[in-house]
Image 1 (spheres, rainbow, N blue to C red):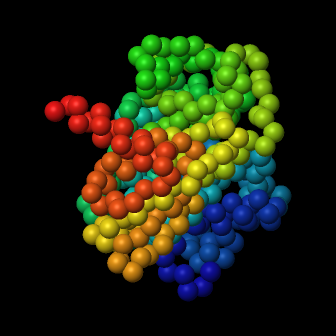
Image 2: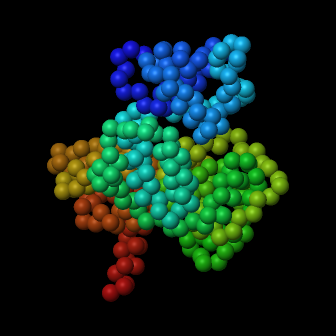
Amino acid sequence: MAGSKFKPQYRRLLFIDAQIRGGKFPSCATLGAKYEVSAKTIQRDVDYLKDELDAPIEYDAIRHGLYYRDKTWFLPAILMSEGDILALLVGTQALEMYKGTPVAGELKSIYAKLAQLLPEKISMAPELIFSRFTFSGAPARPILAEVWKRVIRGLLHQRVTTIEYASPRSDQFKVHTIHPLHMANIEGEWYVLAHEKRWGDIAQFAVSRIRKVELQELTFTPPKGFDAGKMMENRFGKFIHTGGGGKTVQVKIQFSSEVATYISERAWHPKQKITWRKDKGLVLEFPVVDVRDIVPWVLSCGLHIRRLEPKSLRDEIAEAVKQLAKLG
C-alpha cells in the first residue's frame, strides 16, 4: 500500500473485509501496519462495520484476531472513481426527462442509495455538476404507480395479466388479457409488448393508457423466437408492427441541399441508407411496415422534399394534404 496518500474510508473497509474473509484472523495492529494507518483508525473502521453495517465481526482470543461469525454477510462493495461519481451525478440530472413517471421515483431511490456509498471526501462539488448540465426530454404522459408496478411484476414473473386499456383512437376502456413480454421506452413513452390472447398476436400497449391491472395466478411461456430487438429494427417513430410476417416496403425520400446536412446527421431509422447527390441533396432510404407511420414526419419536411417512393406513400401524402386544404 506504499505511496497511496489518499485512502478514503471505503477502500479501507474493502481491505479489512478481504483480510477477515480470508480467514487470516488479523488484528487491528497488523491491519494498520499493512495499510499504513494507525491501529486506532482500523479500530474505528471495524466499529463502523459492526455498528452501521451490522457486520458480524468477532474477536478470537486464542488466535488474537478478527473473524466473521456469519460468513454469508457481505460488504456492499462499490468503489467509485471521479469518472464514476461524475456519471452518478449527471445521471441524477438525466432523471428530469422522466418526471411524473413511476420509474423516476424508483431510479431516484437507487441513486440515493448509491450516493450513501460514496467516499466521505470527493474532489468535485456536486453543485458544480448540477449547474453545468441541463437535460430536457419530451413530455411523457403520467403513469399510475400501481399500474407500473403490476405490469413490471407480470413481465418479470411471466404472469398472465388483465388490463383495462384505451387506445389512442378511442376513449373507451376495453379489457385485454395479455402475456407481457418486453418493456420499451420509445421517444419518452413507455410501451409493453405483449401477446394478446384474443388477437393471437403480439401487440403494443402504451403503459400510460392503462388504468387498471390484475395479475392472474396463471403463468405463461414466452413464444419461441420472440425477439424484441428484431421487432424494433423496422420501427419508425413510436409504432412497432408485430404482424404481417415481417414484410416491409422500401421508402426513398429525396431531400434538397438546404436540409441535406441536417438529415444526414440524424439516425432516423436503424436500417437507413443515405446516398449523396451531385446537387448536394441526398436520398434517404429505409424499410417500413406501414407507410402511414411516416406521413406526419414527411409532411413536417414540407417543400424540402423533391421526390417520394413508393407510390403508396405519395398517395397517403396527397390525401393528407387534401384533408388539410379543407380546413380553410
